[in-house]
Image (cartoon, rainbow, N blue to C red):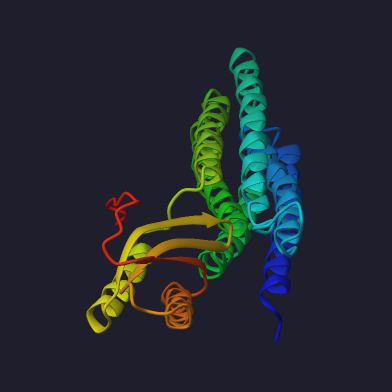
Length: 300
């Protein structure tokens, strides 16, 4: 049985292999047909390869344990991968839009469109299968890198589908102007994709709170503990660090409790929160009941 880290790395190698294969298929389609639409699709797949290589590097870095200079580990390296991918997509979109405008000015006929359509269809099918696998693995293992790369591959599938429809129309109608218009649409589409990836990764770097379902799971657990014991929880704070979860909580206990008893309950809460969200680093601060030094807020 592979451990979690090795499994994630194998998914990234799968993404790299799939991206290389689709580049070859799409470049051949562009070369055979002379279509700028197929060429723009191939350029996007090239970005997939760069993003997957950076993603693999980020996964390796994020798996390193905490050290003197990084007390909370290296999990945020995965967000760097998403930023690189978003930046590369933006660069690719500019290149595609420029090429499309040039072809709008000087339209050229498409040749052997049937061959190009077949090759691109094969590339789309490969991206679809790998993209779905990556997104599912990313959600299951809380990997921002896998999820981002999977979504990019699925975006590539929609891009290819649009190109296929457009080139088919060019083939059937002879309207050569459709080819650069398709490429222009591809460029604008991935421009939006790149912006979205950059925005999401930057938000994550600001230590965004855990997803609502995970916060609700923590709340339900803490409420259950409060009902069974003479303690109260306040000032609950959460943050995601790549695949890591950080939870800070103030536990107010009766003032007559000794240190050993309070510590025993703190350990119980740490284990309970960890189980509630499927893995979390929890820090419990103990105070006597009635303390108001912390400000409570609605964290759900």
